[in-house]
Length: 477
Image (cartoon, rainbow, N blue to C red):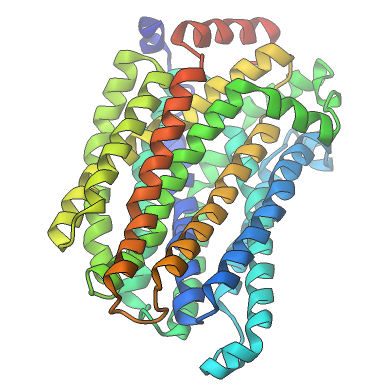
């Protein structure tokens, strides 16, 4: 099968593959900034009690439990007028993307009179809570409309294994770059760690640059003639009329062990990585006592590790030709990379440790979309349907639920260790609490989900190859 992959010709030119890979840059530019700043902003800058901040994220996860799978199902169920022109997903991306960008800015635009003094925060904490929860839910809804459609395009537009891996090679590099830029540029030019208005200015900057990034990725995410022809061939089979009810689709997805193991593995490494990302400001401000400037060194080393390793991950992927095995390797490397973060104190130690963490993260970033492509191909063979948005909607739920898991973990850690909001100097127990949500919990989560994936995920290279042949015979590829 390796020889077959090597002989596959690229359908799309390099600029189109790189443009679609750039969706990771655009996505991380906003979503990574969300992870870096939002919880810290409400706990330490606005000084909303950490229990209420965590409660907002918990209710937000309840909204996600319905919103993400439902939007994914809805994208397959309804048929808009633009489908007569051959489009399916691109118009939905346009509908979602601008409100998503603006809703990110809205999260930070808490009316000043609600938090101007500590007594104001006490008196208005439920109004602040309502603003927080409402803006989070709006942000999530708009993100889901955009994101479910842009990632559902991936297996339809890039159908060969070699091309999918090439696209994600660009996506890995650009995604890590977006993650680092999401913190370093706003931090360098706008943010003062404990000054609320600077976060507003930074969010406006992020929205403007984010829109420019979106313009760059349009050639990659646009539905061209090849994709339109594929859609038309599916319409010819009557497939588009066979979408089950939302409840039936939900039951089918939950019972699909292959998808659930992939989603669980995704949850583990995503939450592990994002929890470290969300904890970065706490590490910089409280453990290293450097404000937010230390993040530039920490994330720079992580970016360097990811960039250096990506070509090697590409070579390894083609050589072993086994997305399952590569996913497990990256997971165990990430677990190992978390261990030093439990013990290091100095900036140099954190920098070196995060360099190796970047190597593992690069592996995950590289292999995840091709692995999801394998899963969706397997689903299409078993069901006779190619309805990616439904499955991506559920995967999106795992991402959002992970954000609530992170918020609750941070809240419990801070409450149990007596973390003092808004103060740089913390007691040793509170510093250990930061290590709990920075490294200890993420390491355990990555290890457990990796072991479950290793045990129960069964898509071998031979099975993947067999599915590709069957899909061609069925006219779905």
